[in-house]
Image 1 (cartoon, rainbow, N blue to C red):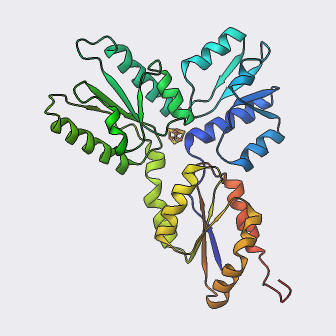
Image 2 (image 1 turned 180 degrees about the vertical axis):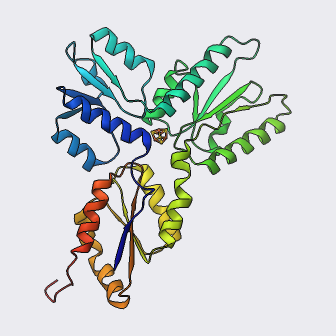
Image 3 (image 1 turned 90 degrees about the vertical axis):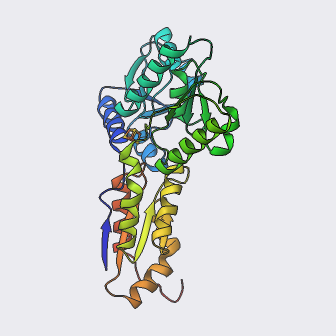
Length: 306
Ligand code: SF4
């Protein structure tokens, strides 16, 4: 039996950077993180054992002066920095540089066009309403940006007014292109002269993963996908894996492998050269995939009392 961990799976650059910042800062003393540092309960638990305290916005407003708060890779709206400044809180800013650049672009667009006459502009963000990164992006426009998640929400846009389109970094490239086509066709239906300004701001470190993941899934007989139960990115990538290889199983931790023990041992008994691939989401830590690998390696045959 050959077990391989997908080298493209696991934390993206931005999340790795935020976690390294947390580990470094924890050595200097008490540290809070505004929201879960990553959508993976196991990794959050690991960092909490090192002393990281996860807080929410209500906590932020009541923290004593000089508290240290880490901002995760998703980024934050300007109001968070303002609250911290008012309360004398020290910010450790681990916003991913890709997200930071996107925030700057949206803010620059907002500042440049906010007073345009006679047709006030509309900044559209293709993203998931309420997602932490999207809240940070909307904040750059004084919360005037319109968040669109799918084509059927396009009736919220006035196609007689200028349109500036951006995307949350983790949305799908296909979904974005479909949205752009739909916007252009609606503008033409309205016989409007508006030319939408389109900014493809999808992060390729995630977008390129689907094809790589599907290649990996096809190259193995059986796939164990490791992801957080609450992570939407994990669910999406798991479904892509399953599409490429029907023998794909979702686990959140090494113990979950027990749930699929029968199938795995069954495959192994009919194929001594069984190839098992382990992969995960952008929020799945490498150490967790290694624990799953160790569990698989030590998997004992099922005895009659199981
Ligand atoms: S997905 Fe891309 S933009 Fe988002 S945190 Fe990771 S590296 Fe940064």
